Image (cartoon, rainbow, N blue to C red; front, side):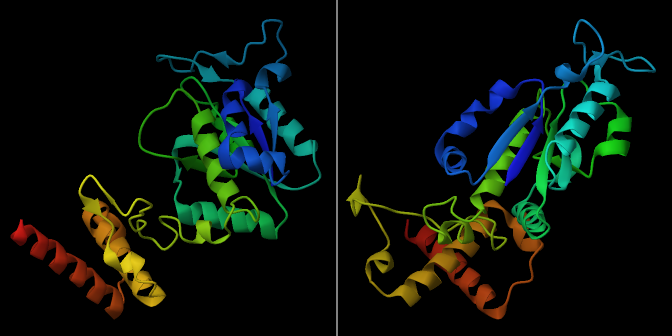
Length: 255
């Protein structure tokens, strides 16, 4: 998977050299290519911003350097590209969105061009002319689109074949089924007076699977009830969730 990144600060992306994305880069599962709008300016000072028409605070990234950088990124490789602008006004980045875009890119042999804006934003005509999708990682303001771009790259990379040590890891991640992940435990068995659930040591894979699904439903109900409101629970899921609630109430009464 090829990512072309339009950014004024390519050095920010060095953190992707670590962890899963770092291994994916080493193995050529993904490639990163950077395009700095300053390299496409027509002025001696390499200026890429100007005051907004109509007045107001801050500066706006100019059309010409951004448009030319995107055009150069498109022309640098024959593979068609999906151009995504990282913006708080964009479509919320969810696991479903990541999965949809990744499958679409893989099936159509597409690559991603990610546009990281700065200042108060970018000239609206860039959106009209060059952008296919706008993407937001949350309802808050950041200094630029670089961090959201890295989030998107990381999320996509996890879904690519060979990126994770265990192919099942991505399938079992939080949000893959529209639910939060179940609790995880590792050795030692008991620490600071806390023990792991006995079912996890039973060797009964069916019971373990049921336990984990129940916990996943329960944790979602506790921490992200909004996710359950978007989902129609099956009869089995309702039963497991009620078991979780009953166990929680029972535990509270004992304490």
